[in-house]
Image (cartoon, rainbow, N blue to C red; front, side):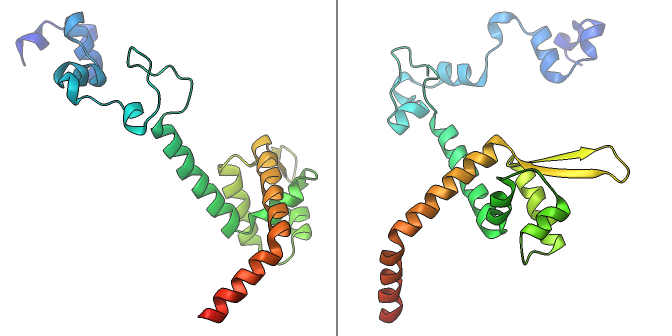
Length: 186
C-alpha cells in the first residue's frame, strides 16, 4: 500500500476508488475531466463543442442551457431515426391508429387490425411500449386483464403521422408521375 492509502481512515477504506480519491486528495488537487482539459490545453487550441458547431457561446465560454448542444441534437436525431424505422417497418401505424380512439385489450386490437399475427402484434406492442408510445396496464384479476393505450407521446406521434399522410395526399399525383418517369427511364 502507498503512504497515502495508509492515511485513509477505516470508514473510507470501504468506499469506492473514486470516493477514496475524494477522501484522500486535497480539495485544490481534485479536478473534473473538463477542468483538467482547460488547465492542460493551450488557450488557442481549445475549442468548445458550441464553437465547433457555430453555436453562440457566452463571454465566459460556458453554455447557458438555452438551446440543445450538438451532442443532444445528434442523440435526438439518432433516436428519431430508430423510432421512425421501427414504427414504419413493424406495421405499428395501424396499431397507433386503432389505439388513438380508445384503450383496448390484446384480443380487441387483434380484431381491429387485420392481417397481423399474434407474434407480430406482441412484438410491435412491446416495441411501442419500450419507446414510450404505448402504455400497458395489467389489472390484477383472474385471469389478468391487460389493456393498451397511447401515451401523450404516442398521440403526438399520431398527429405527426397524420400530417405526413396529408402531405402524401397533397402530392400523390406528383409522386406517382415522378416514380413512373423514373421507372420508365430504368
